[in-house]
Length: 362
Ligand SMILES: Nc1ncnc2c1ncn2[C@@H]1O[C@H](COP(=O)(O)OP(=O)(O)OP(=O)(O)O)[C@@H](O)[C@H]1O
Image (cartoon, rainbow, N blue to C red; front, side, top):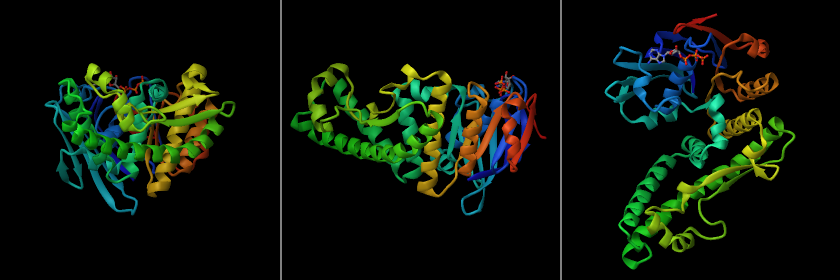
């Protein structure tokens, strides 16, 4: 999917803006507060239906206005034109639209716009909680495996049910609860199997990028299933049954899984500098992009906000080179053009100047 026209209305300081991005690289330049990140945030809405900067959607709506909208026309993989949109109002309701058809279901829209984001905060993928890494893994699965979302939703439902039983002090090993335990294990193992297979496919691709971005380190990626290594989930649940009742929730299962990154044998954050952590994130996202391309034959969108922050010029160039090589549609923001001198070499690019919420092609 490539966006060829974008229209924003009442989005933060952008009253109304319309631009035609390059199918390859689009660069947005402007001073602090001009509206660059808002453009990235608006595009992110098409890929995720939410902001990456705030959990309060009303903060995104322009002061004094009732709602914002993001519309894009694009071409799908078979070059068929499509019109996509996302609107949100202060009453907290949202509406997605695909070729003029409105819906309050997000999954169809976001499945059409596979998007990844890299910002100075992206190191959270490594130093943040395991849920960040599960989300990363599930993004890939959502976009490559039809039916994955249904499986993940089903698991969340049965987990909730199991936790409710635990809160009531129920012993889940007793015969009257065996049915629920069976359903839980079945769903948990199905979800876990998908994740294990996905990370296994990702590892060799990631290692290639890690060698390129962090050549001085021995970087190892692995998946931890969320229960004892050498036991089955059923065995772990039996072992933890008393503890789970005491805690009032389930402490084994894919909701406790993690994707670990070890560098020279220790956790990545113990050894890598902030810039190196960013490079590790870049390698993970490049690997995800490459795997997505090879499994789906589709192309994705990559948003790079504030690319100058803590990535040296050579790494910035390597990152963007790699993404463009994979035919990704890349959107980049930067304050200074000096941060992106290397982009002179790309023939296919568009430069935009952002000033007080207005966007002009240069
Ligand atoms: N709901 C809103 N309505 C109107 N303006 C807003 C709203 N939310 C934020 N702003 C303003 O929008 C402007 C653009 O912010 P944005 O983060 O997009 O800037 P930026 O160009 O990325 O800046 P920087 O280079 O500092 O990161 C800021 O001046 C901000 O105060």
